[in-house]
Length: 212
Image 1 (spheres, rainbow, N blue to C red):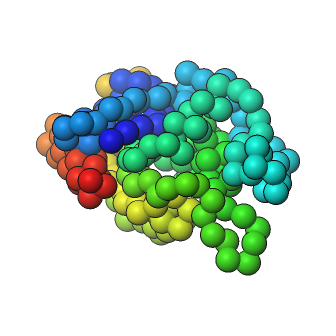
Image 2 (tube, one colour):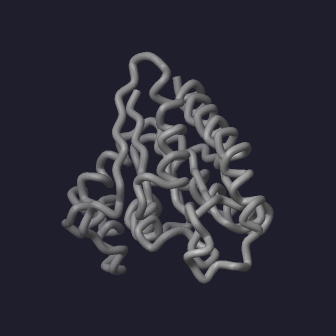
């Protein structure tokens, strides 16, 4: 079984990367698995340019992104994966730009403009999302549910875990950031964030188990 984790966070040592690694470890805890974690910020790529090449009735182009850059091999790995894990912090009420660009180029070739909108990829892939944010937990549920619904239709069965009121800075006093309840945030990082990572681990393991 092939596990692929896509990290859309700029920092490899903070909340999103840690939580995604837990999900990856959960999936990899099953026997007979191979896997890889890819950090989008390490790559040089762009989002979809709207060329519609992936919709051409040409067996060499259909359902494949025509752009050639660092994301090209990642897309092929995503299509081949049995379990795909995607992690992103929330910036301005959305996933990061890198995560969005990956999604555009991965999701768009996966559907046609035909009336049935049938998925085009050769197999269904389990998808697990990891979201982190400094906002309250309920703020983005509709947004997360929308991403899950889209992935369900185009890629395969999808679910998510999230961490909220996350600690972004070690010393908040050094930043223009006095809107936060710092003691609450630090307490949650000690008490709750390990539980969030455990939930991510269990999601990854569950997705891998249900694929077997």
